[in-house]
Image (cartoon, rainbow, N blue to C red):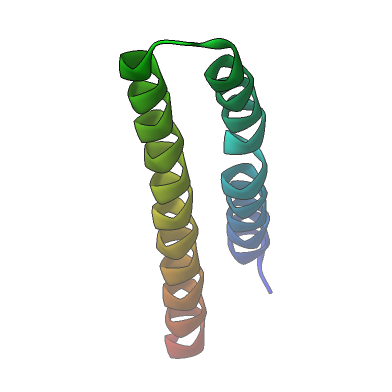
Length: 78
């Protein structure tokens, strides 16, 4: 493997780890806020934020998975 391929694999691995780890502290923080809040309106907003973070986490995971598969296909061609 050449240097570009190694760097690309390293970048994809770091991006994958970031998509898995990054939303978790934010979600935990929002869940703590959710327990403290008594108003229904704020609870709904917090639940929506949690769902958006979860969905964005999965979208990023599949984007990076697609990029990884595309990278492997390009390396096979060349």
